[in-house]
Length: 224
Length: 405
Image 1 (spheres, each protein chain N blue to C red):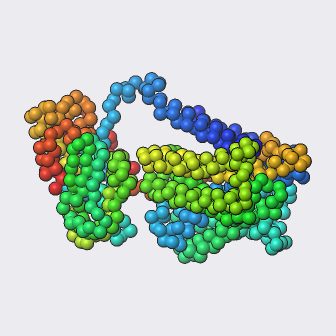
Image 2 (cartoon, rainbow over the protein chains, first blue to last red):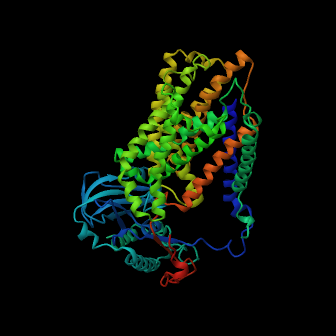
Image 3 (spheres, rainbow over the protein chains, first blue to last red):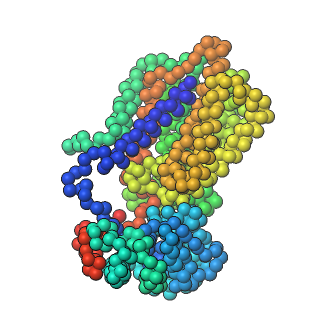
């Protein structure tokens, strides 16, 4: 009876905690939001970790323990694509060369191929990310890493990449360039819809609304 | 200092009530003795404090030696970020076990007697020696966290130099006493229900402690993430959960064979309270975790991993309390008409000891480098205001645009 009592007590505490959590999550819906906040659209953000090296083709590499490189795609691509629901990666043991298109990601029928940020042998791939591509959109720089490379020309490869303040400046320029690219596409308004003009999110999922030709143009202009 | 009522959460208020209850009972316990504060008797001298605070508490703290061994002995460095939270849990767990013992012992001031007046034929002596020695080892294993925080580099260097021997000693001591806690019950086969008495109790105690140690690490990582945004990566936690499930499968295979060989499976359909408690144990410790872990998206989410691990922890608590209490209840009831249920004082002390554990863990996570340092990142806020596509641009105002994490 003592064991049952203890278990019921712990389960009750967990139940109370779940109730509290559920109530706090419902707050914005259930209760009146403070004036001025309710109508403000959520601001879109791009994350740029300081220790990550960015390839101009929007993939990244991070040094791990000094002898391997963790590789993934950046926040810019996954935001533009509106999420990730498909990931294709090279096989473990393959040799990939910096700048070669070796990663394929897709969302809602649109597909993009991305380049390797550095040369080397693929020593591991993130099978969790392949089976559950949502991880890549949720946290592209940590849980959503894609493969581990044993670098072949580390110093030369890294010198081609953007890091820290340079990466921030570069991403800002890329966002600006992306909007110019979209405005050119907007000559045919149906292709980009209303998203850019109505105060909604200016970037998330915009590629979904482009036709295949424009997606191909995006790939050539931004991901190579 | 002004107290802000808005900062008092439900759980902070609840913790305060629990601690107050513990304080009052402590005064009664040490002022008026065990008789005034517990329902213990000569017939049932071991109650909740031994069953939960000691036998269960030591098992819940097993993540320390498991993770330390994986990382420092087997050199699986991937799990390195988990070692500190696991050692903190272990260190706190053992300290609280000792506190629990001080409440339970009739003459707590004589606790050191085990060191001097040794009885090498007693399992209890071995447990006492191991728990005391291992707590000292854990203090040393945990010390780099404090030394780093206060930048005591010279002492840190010395401690780091002896890390591997310390870890080996810790594993050795843990193997000894985690199993010896099971050995304590080998002397009462006639009193225990066949579900839980087994000559394999020491091995079963050791194996289940490994799995729950990993489970506790996942649980505390989830709770720390919720409270302080300090946590471990989900794939790492998932790998831990995978090992935990693997160990559990081995454990239940051993349990099944053991029950079969002792002809204890025949009781499974007797509809007794003991059978219900066994089913509860298996459900929490095996069935629910297996189901949760294998639900595709749920099993990969942080919340899914938390519930998987929490269920294992619940199952483990059920098992330990079944061994220490449920299995003996029938014997005392049928032979002496005696039943034991903990008094309000015992409950208050146990709850307040657990609360103290939560509070100290939270403070340690907040003020010491327990979880891995999160890398600094810049967050660019994109303009979402109405803008012409041709002139859409980033807002350069540094205050709102750049946020350091």
